[in-house]
Image (tube, rainbow, N blue to C red; front, side, top):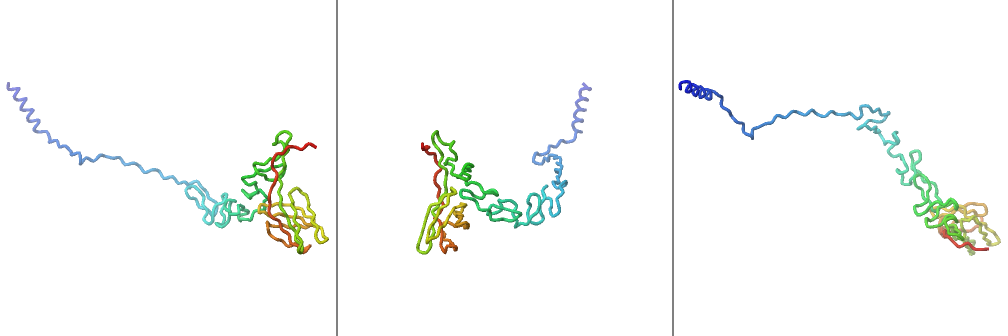
Length: 240
């Protein structure tokens, strides 16, 4: 019995000697967070060598003045491509007036091309409507393609006398006889602005649409009434 009481007394003393356990309120708990190292900064210009007059920015060479054109620096007022010009033509850094295009063409991407509603016909050497035939092979058997012809009515006035004739781009000349003089008139060029170039008695003159032009060699005035077209369809071939 004495040994049992001694054991109980020992346990009581042992418990009494334990330090008081305190719990930490949840609201005061501060978790330990390990610091994340800052990401490594990459210098995109570290291995970029820009030519004189240019500075690297985000890995690209930027002109200190002006603008970049194919890797070179040019004046801010200069053009780099055709797209920089209202006229659609850039040459040696300057916007230029494009060359005259023939009827049915427009200046696009640095050259004269058929307008979007037309297509090039090699057989007729001109731009024709996409709905028109270009060659006989596009027509049925025993049919032929009537070529597209450009036409205009040209008028010559000498004093009170007025003469008008139809001319076409078929290489044919028309003869005007007035006041005992003969005038051989051949249309040679047809332009997209509606003007036509004529050869009159071996002299060349370009006449805008419905604009009276003085023709000094004959003391006359001359004009044409605008470009129209005909043909461009398949027709039954006539049996001779």
